[in-house]
Image (cartoon, rainbow, N blue to C red; front, side):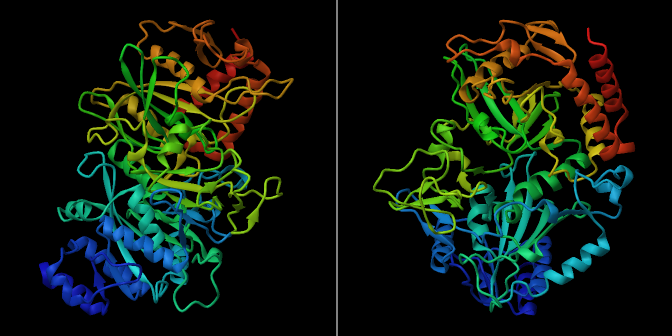
Length: 615
């Protein structure tokens, strides 16, 4: 059975109204209209059929991604009280969630595999794993049966065909998400390439990740909603099945749990696909940096949360003549090309950034990006139709503030105006410094990879390896081995240079940061830029027990505001590193055990020798 017959049979058997039209929230049209509209490809139809049978929605809407459809979705959300239009800006919206649904929930985020060791190393001595949460197939099946049957009753199921990466790129991957949240539809339209162009690609038979999401609040409601925000906090479960390329998320409408193209697909599932196919899916920004002579390099960088990743990706350099352009601020998919050059794409189409702390001082380009076509969630609201959060200048005296709970708020209050994890969701193309190659199908060439984080003294480990600790899709020991395998590829390989940074070292006496950060970080990027073209190992660098450090005077400090103690900044205290290696040894023993690759064990032994027997 194929063509019109297959589609009509699918939905007539289920007695479900179906729509591809520009309908608003909950609207749908009958099966008979299917004959005149594009058809779901067979594999997609089979997936949707199974989801409909399980979740029992009142209707199905296949998302096309047109501006008219998006406008109708937003109008429906506004009518239901889930979002509010912000008149101070062009097409910007404010959502306030249930206070119990404000962030990713690591304790309820699981990887489901046949064997535990496929997901996480077995911790030593009964210690709890910090490298992911495993759920057995039988426990997961039971959890699914307790949640999904009938969960969309009375609601419309939206079918979202989406692409992670430019449609048609050899580095891109595809997904189909079914959801009963129109807020998710509006947000996925920003964060991914979504709709008819992807459906056409799926019709060619490309593989896709199957993503199923429900708020878990069927109609009629058994209890009232908070802030008109449907969710089921007591039953939240975000599950990943890497063997079958599936994601099933239940109970949360928050973006990190419900926009399944983001961390769920782009990191947890994609990291496993990358392992199987020989590439890398990483929690990294990508930026292009051009020197005053017009030479350009691309850099990827991994930082844990709250370590300035978005600020670095959108940096306004303090060094005259240098230019930084943004390819992506969160996720990088990287693959070696036929010439052996590591190429990277940003698989996302938008920015899902933390609002508090973002300002014209810290990130003027982010502020310009979010001035239109943006969905704000759990930020404060001004009485003149704008948004506000901690880190912005106080509004005018005549302007009053409403906090993320919808209550009047005044400076000096004991609670914050914006939730600390409040977000903006904005199209990447609006960034004033978006790189001209950000949608390049072959990706941009990576010359350097930077790792960093936050620790007041010494360098940074924080036991968040690769800034991927919450996002590994498989055993961390195998993940390390996969990275190490890149060096022994049979094909040509030009490995990028690896660097470590710590913007957050503090003066032991005053507690003040030793380095001013933000745009001044361009001075560090300049040194990295030059090291990428070095002709000898010690060029502009001196050896230390932890690697090559900038030679005295090679970090350009001309025009640097205030006095910076460069000696303290690059001090390598032996006692700290003796303690650090001891902690690392304990961490690897307890958390990774026998899955630690021999090369990493050898490096740790060599580091232990150096810190106890310095040069």
